[in-house]
Image (cartoon, rainbow, N blue to C red):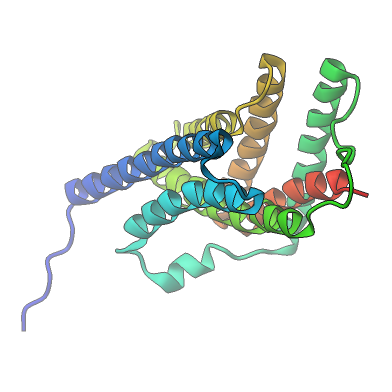
Length: 240
């Protein structure tokens, strides 16, 4: 009875590099597709606001899901599920992350515009509840989970494995930088100051959630922090 040969160190490193490249390609495709779809929708190609939101979300989600599935095709699903664990310490740390990042965002917004930017937007007539719900589900549920799986659960972990113990902290920094850059490109802020605020806030969120994942080996706390961070903005800006 023959057995499969054990993978060599070179094989493992090559597979890790392929995973990192695949995730980077997925992220780039997500940005390019989202910007294309958003531009197409604004030009009148997608008249329905609900379809506009769904198309923009799917333009980001599909490449990220494809990249994650490609990386996970060789992974053990039980072990992958364990990494989603959430303990009380993770939850407490996650709440602290939200307080710090939301406080940082509010402070910069007040300094730049004179307000926190978390007030309900004025509306003419009754708001489109369907549009609000679809947007909220994407922002609060789907995007945080998917982004944490891709950025912290897969990209950061594989990048950390490729580094030495002394330089492993760079995995957190580089992943947070990529995370912030993607949000800056997708968000397309109206002014440079707003862009700076988006980048700094999301970099801080990525840095803190990445640190939590590096400390615990689980992404549950990062997912919770990301969900709560986005939920605060949705609840605060929900039309009254």
